[in-house]
Length: 132
Image (tube, rainbow, N blue to C red):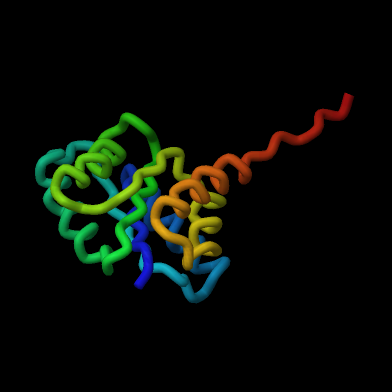
């Protein structure tokens, strides 16, 4: 068994990240899906759709929700899934380094994978040394 990964994003973000992950890793070691929330979407309809995706991803080890922006509708929908009986951890601030780090530690349990996701997201940020 393994953790399922659900990207909760604004429109076009999640699929782009999954496509790029396939470019880097032609075979993804975890099942990854994206739910992209359109601008005028009904949150209740999206919550029902997202719950179906999350339940399908959960093979017994839970679901890691990676959301693009804390406090925005996609993240709020992801966070609400736990009240629907889905075992999950949610990490916001999704970026490509975060997703790739998660995929490189596919054997880790859900709680540890959430920490790895956050660390990978932060570690993927680089500020160049200004030439003075």
